[in-house]
Structure formats: C-alpha cells, structure tokens
Image 1 (cartoon, one colour):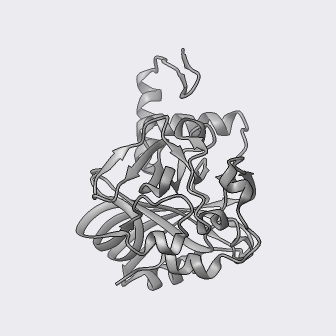
Image 2 (cartoon, one colour):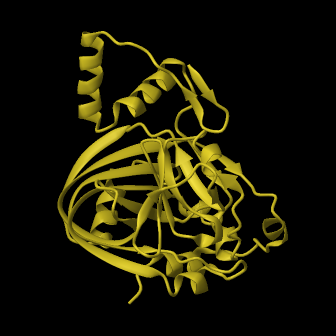
Length: 284
C-alpha cells in the first residue's frame, strides 16, 4: 500500500479469476469503473457514511461574487466521488465523476483538474444509485425536469442525479473568469455557450429543495461530461431519444464554510433565488 497524504492511498492486491470476472460484470452492469466500484463496495462493507452531501460555501456567497478558492480538489476528493462546482475566480465549470475532477474552460477545452486547484464552491457525495429509470423522447430542459420530478419521492430531501445516454443535441455554458466581487448575474452575462450534436455523455448534478435556496441552487442543476472527455459544462437545454437516470437520495448535509475575508464580510442575508434563476438559465 502506498500513501499519498494529499491524494489518499493506493492499494495493490491480486484477485482470483472468478472474483475478477464477478467484479468486471458488476462494473459493467452499474456503469462504473472497477476501481470506483471497489471503493463503493468497501465503503458499504465498512459501513461508512452514505447519503451525505459535502458542500463548500453557499450559493448566496456566489451570488455576491465570493469566488476566492478556499479548498483544494485533493481535499474535496476525500469527501466524495461525484459532484459539481466551480474553480477559483469562477474559472470554468467543475464536474466530478467516478472519483475524478474535471475542469471545463471557457475556450471549450476540458482538462483533469490538478490536485492543488482550488474551488470556492463545490458539492460532492459518494454516489450509489437508490433508484434507476429509463426516460425516452426528451424534448427539452423543461420536459426533462418534469420527468425527473415524477421520479422523486420527497420534496424536502436533496437528490443526487446521474443521467447517461446519447444526446441528439445538448446546449451548455461555461462560466468565464471574473474579478472578485463581481456579482454572479454580471459575471455570467458574458458566459461562453456551446452546442453539440450527437454525443454520448453523462450529466452530473443535484436537485435541491426550495427551502435551501440560500445554500444551493434550488431545483435541478446538471453539468455535462462527454464520454470522450472533450466537452463539458453547465447544461442549458437538450434533446435525446433515451436516457438512463440514477437517483441517489441525500439525507444529510455537511456544510463547510470558508473563512476567507470575502466570505466573512459578505452580506448573505438576502434571498439569492432570483439572481440564481437568471445566472443559471439560458441566454440568447
């Protein structure tokens, strides 16, 4: 076993042919990499905490322009293997899938985020599907969210969402780097927008109850990562013939608040819902 203080531990072991075959088959059925599946199974066996969101900072702070990075990717990865966020200075969109963090940049490129990259806002969990469904003939964002609403069984709990499939068309945006203190609506008014046709990918995200709007983005918040890792960003609209949906029920929230000067001085007493609706929606 090799220990890396910032990145975790690397464990090497030899598996018999039968166990390896079973692991590969389970990996194929779940759509997870073998290494990610091993981590999930170990967590289940050792009774580690599940169904918990770990969140850095709040949506209200983002609305006020608090974009200073306060936690590293390496630290975030200690708390989950699935999630989304943004990077220091609102420098692009963050996607965490199968224990790897990706950074979508405003020039359209995508890279694996370095361990020392810092985030001002992030939401992560250890994803394990509690419910799976197939949706067909999705005609747009509103159609998708209505279908997803029908799959939820509670309006007061957070839900992790993983959607996988072939997208006939998908439109997404990537936030551009902004000066500290620039409010979110202004910062996203010149965001980079992209559209792809006929791509395979995964949507990573969460549904947040309306009562938590000062903490997280209320409603559905999804980021795209294509299978070839060439395209990624905050989803604005989409069309697809069929998509597989996994839902992960979140029953606890761990909120880590920054101690940066910008956060400590920010006025977070207002309701950010209206500003979030503008910043997160599609632009012409």
